[in-house]
Length: 496
Ligand SMILES: [Zn+2]
Ligand SMILES: [Zn+2]
Image (cartoon, rainbow, N blue to C red; front, side):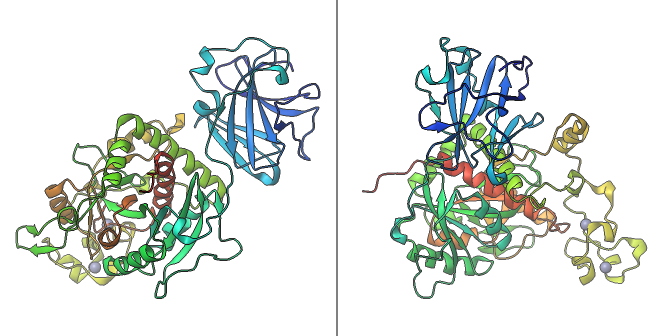
């Protein structure tokens, strides 16, 4: 093994591994595209990273870091691939992908792969892989494949989606499915939810697709869910929403960002007055607060350290999702498609398009024509001079050539739930100002009525009249990725 990578960036080499003996339990497994005499390894500084497979053929890797003398420094476990025949380095995103048998990929960030602390505390030199001290195993994504629960009441985590688009983004993030040979758990009579069961990380998870949108549907379906899967302790409502452009601290919210809430406010539960909306009370008051576990958990996630972890794990899972569903469905739209108009600026035919109805629309409550409701801003020639400048977007545009890409952020705050779609920038801002609301959606109140949950929603529009569907797939993906990152932080509570 010669020519170690000396630079500050990792590189790939193919080495003759015929003299190396891997640590017990692991093997130098070769696939058809490589051999022991040209085994792919990763080089960084004075270290070699060996992607080893397990003797028991599980779908995981032990990535063993050795120094030039062959001593093991550290081992990182990665899941999702074995029999590596190709390594890919993504310098822009600081990630390494190990591609193995059947094109399966295990992708790790540089920080997980190389560590930071360990590199400052090097082990002593030792002759070969096998004589080194037992490696420190740093678990990556996953735990061992386990057995499916024997009964549906054993599922601890429930995920709820209202739309097929949302459901489709969640399913690829399962680590194992329990229903590949058909459903084995059943449901109570009258329950029309569609369920997928499996494992995400260390939790048995049941994912429900509600049979329709809106509060009433969500309430009935959540009640059925609760009855069919009585053991669920943590429920996550995962999907898409419309957001306010700025949160209460003045931080910009962009399309593709994710909002997390520990409670919902039912904003249309009250009276609309001519000048303002008088809400009766919040769900937090009327339906009882989130249970103590959920409140404590969300409070932890909001701390700086955990938020940082959450963001980076979300990006990790998003990348994984994008690689797994490789038709581009979950790639972000062009940032030029993230357009925020002034709140009072209406989505209607421009004057030169001579639409009688739209030309008479001058006030907040004047109608626009039916055609305008279904048309894009481009078709209606919505006035670009009415766009609100966004700092984060400008930052991405300025640095796009240097690899600066769309990085969705996570925001915490109350989410408003209503029975009608919020489609007015002015109403949005007015209602948001009352409770520092950061997003609007339609199912939270119904689900919450039956099972307190954490709401995790990707932002696909600004809850105004210019909304379109372009960001729905990407927002579904960022929400699903955040869900998985949230689950990694969840600690189950002993049953009393
Ligand atoms: Zn019109
Ligand atoms: Zn428009």
